[in-house]
Amino acid sequence: MIVIGSAINLGASFLALMLLTQGAPVAIAIAAHFAPLPYNLFLFAALWRLPQRPRPISVAACAWLLAVTLL
Image (cartoon, rainbow, N blue to C red; front, side, top):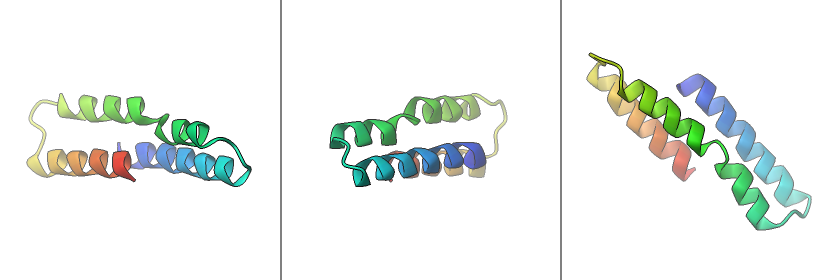
């Protein structure tokens, strides 16, 4: 979740910054930045449904989801 999801988020953020520097409308850049959000929620939900998941994994998943959503 952290490796693949973070790589996808970095790519989307990079794309959004490229769009802004090329003069694209801000709404399109924002849409590109938040495009991976459904996939992030899917990754989080898949991890959350694991039986007997350790507590540090749950805390890390919550922190990761919060970080990639806000940043």
